[in-house]
Amino acid sequence: MISRDLRAIAHGLVLVSAVLALIAAALWFRTGPLEPQASAAPNTISTGAGGVPDSGRQRIEMIEQLKALNSRLADVERGLRSGTFVIQTAEQKGAAKAEPKEAGQ
Image (tube, rainbow, N blue to C red):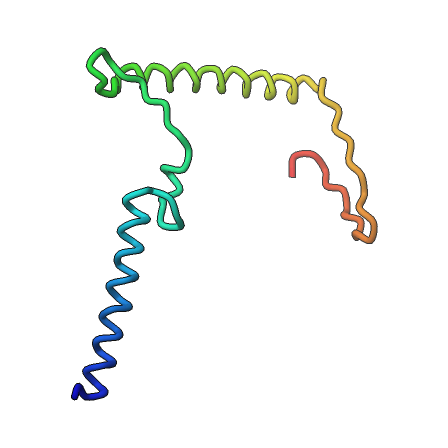
C-alpha cells in the first residue's frame, strides 16, 4: 500500500505534467494566452530575391516614412506659428475655472 505522502506527490506530478502539456500545445499552435503581443499582428518584411529580409530596403522605407512624418509635422508647426489655427475650448460642468496664464510662461 502506498503511503499518503507518495500519493500526494504522484497527484502533484500528474498535475504539473498536464499543465506543461497544455503550455507546450499552446506554444506549438500559437493560439492562447501565451502568445507574445508582438507576434499578434502580421508583419510585412521587405525581402530580397532569396526570401532573406533586406535590411537596406527596410531602412530606406523607414527613412521615407520619417521624411513624410517630418513634413506633416512641419506643416502643423507652420500653421501654429502663423496663427491660422483657431483653438476653441469648452468648460466642463462642475470643473473649477483655471486662471489664464500670460503668454511666455
